[in-house]
Length: 174
Image: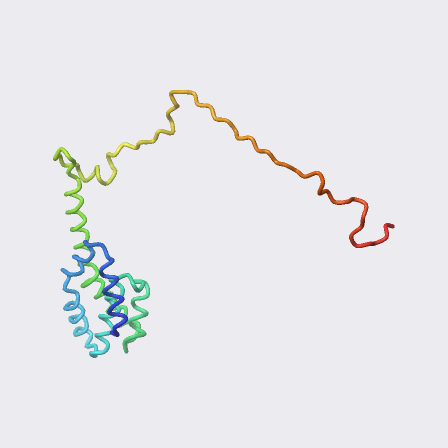
């Protein structure tokens, strides 16, 4: 990985939400990528490509839909092997990060769910199942209100009318 790519990844990692940063840090993804590389007996340079592409997808710098295609293009493997590697990376790396992120978000939402009186709000309330809609469109106003339309003054200069008798093309009238 060149210096520019490393710097780009570091800058992107800093901009990620803290929960996602923690999920990535706790995932030990490099070890899991190494195990996938060993499983498919990838050469060292192919393992580096696998790690780089995985990190680029985790940081949101590459589209996950292009992951298999990028692996196949960057590594010396056929399409079916690239698809198997993609499935293993999804199961071993991406899924644990996703689950960890869900747990962190659930934990944070439980902390937020406590209102100022210290009472717990149920998860259904947070999810919107018990939240009452504050739609006031069906209620009438209690007072009559009147609005006035603004008056618009348009001045038309009568002196700038075009002459109607002159023909600009000087064509004879038939």
